Length: 151
Image (tube, rainbow, N blue to C red; front, side, top):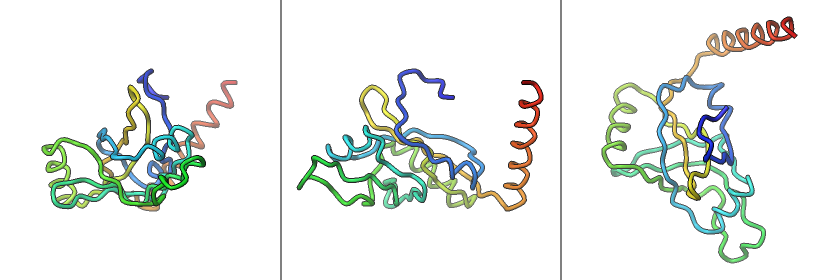
């Protein structure tokens, strides 16, 4: 599924693909503490109800749940705290303009490690209507039927 071999995926937001059309994808670093990185490496991260917001020229991820690290004791942070994302200022301003003008949403799609660094894949998304979701479900079902017949 993933084309990049040195990318180790920790978590994916499959609900985002169900609820939104992903128009563009961006990569951003995440500002984390040590125990949070260890917890992500164990796969204890949930992106289901998370979203991104832009304030004062900075981009943040809200609602991303990183479970506390078992051996972390006093160094553990709040599991759902707002985390700053690391992107170039130009990219952030371009995203801010498109989100404000076109009414799109910034949704986290996956958390992964590249060269030892935790990264977040953000999607510039447009919301799906109910009939779009039904149409996608029908296409998937038809594809499954075709694959069954081929076997």
